[in-house]
Length: 435
Ligand SMILES: [Zn+2]
View 1 (spheres, rainbow, N blue to C red):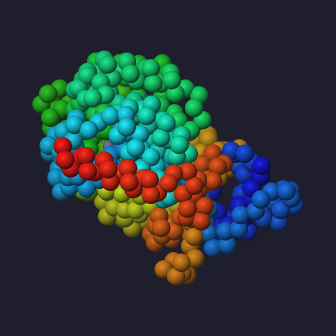
View 2 (cartoon, helix red, strand yellow):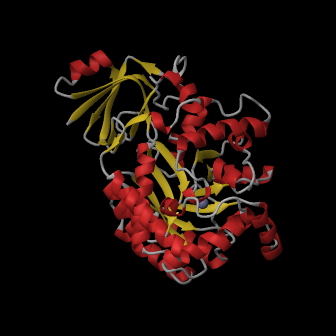
View 3 (cartoon, helix red, strand yellow):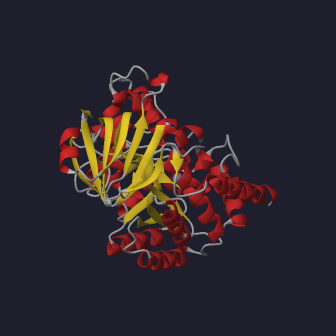
């Protein structure tokens, strides 16, 4: 089964900062077989199905490096509050009353529908009931790294850090070998997990060769509390516990000293930059240009829809490019091609998936998005990378492939029924409002 995709432009991400024209991408099964001139593709693959994309740009599917997918069911439940008040006063109580396998299964499908239609082909998640999430991921046909959450306090999912970790170990074994799902160990944050919980989480991640996904330095409050409780800032405490390494995806990284940036670089840790959530919760603005200058690998995440409130990586990458300039005081900070790399290959690298996805190279899995730049609001187009970063949005995504399978075609989602997703979300909304 071969397909030739014939777009106007290709931004392969590898090699970096390149725009190809008159080139095609050939899919064979779940993989990219070739990137080559259109005429040659037609000659070499005469039996292939051709997909004409005459005003489109093709690029790797977007990687959402930090989210809590099922929280779409709490979108707009509580806004205009700082993080700790939002979590303690609203989100955690609502979760305590409503959390279940069904909540996670339904919420993940609703989130996957939004993400796929917006060109996100892979997401790095942290939530409860990972087996239910994995079933939803399989039904949606999206790729995911599912965080096996660890907390100290009781929820309907588990009662203490030891029971979260026991469930994490079982789930990691149960999901091994799934083609679309990988697992990560996800100790929630320095302020919700004790030293022993972190040590055991790190040991599990090392034993099973998994990513370690953790919120780090999101707010100044969390740093102040750590200094008074532990005598050190959270990142230093995590480092002493072995939790800062090449397998670490540190979500947020808003408040970082120069030494802390160099510690992240030295350890090979990755940062998931979540600009909208940081602005909305008034957490601050991450020092992205300084992280990049220190050669820290930075990807982009939406965070959960309850604190964003969109799972839209185009709006995140645009905001990331704009904020990086304002924070650095330099208009050349985070140019378009670099922002696109953060939303694709660098996110994949943070998850250890860069040999499989994140760029359009022969041999990689075919996770691809087509964006139509033919709309009048996008004409003229001097540079498709510029439009993708500063002008286009998820409404211009027309086709998406995950692992070679078409999941969105001519803007229609092929794997989930949108009417059913809307009904599910509305039903959960009624339950949340009445409890
Ligand atoms: Zn988060």
